[in-house]
Length: 158
Image (cartoon, rainbow, N blue to C red):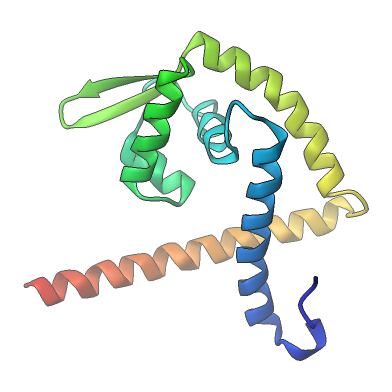
């Protein structure tokens, strides 16, 4: 079922659609692979962008848009499956893909590319680039708002 587009202004439509799409894409993604969830695969994808043990769990949580506790649970599950390794570095816990994790992700990456081709079928590259720019701007605005809320909370505590 689609939203009644003509009854919803653009901003609330985009806002609500992002939630709906995120949930639906996660559900579809989870059905595509029984070994690793979509979020676990997203964690692994992010790890491929950085040197081994570069990211700590707090930084990973920020990239995933989740709490540090959720990132830790995901990392622990992936560690039990042999896909990631965790290393304590003072107060930080750093994360890296294992050889098994890199092999798994490389194989899954090919499936993900085909899946993305299907999702973006019929959209020209200019539209996709505009979507990327718009989502990047929105992400920056959310980060700025998060900082504002943190500052307000800090002021209340002092």
